[in-house]
Length: 89
View (cartoon, rainbow, N blue to C red):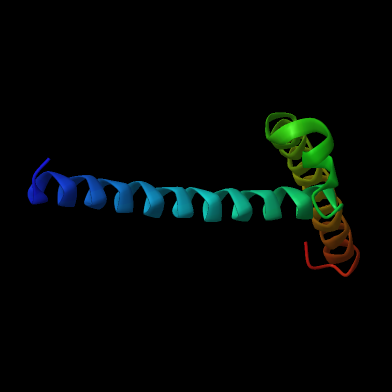
């Protein structure tokens, strides 16, 4: 093997190591978000795995969005009633 081939292999190895480090950082960020959603410091991921933790996190966020929508609708209705009772509507 000549010097150029060795250098090419070392360059390829550096790229793989950099990609591995980037993937590990992305995985840690993703795990942090899931731990926040599940409110458990990452225990849910450890117990159930990333796939189930992700699916369940989507369900949690969907439920929270629905609840928020209901609160907003109730608040808007309350504002309309208040406006109407004050003669502004």
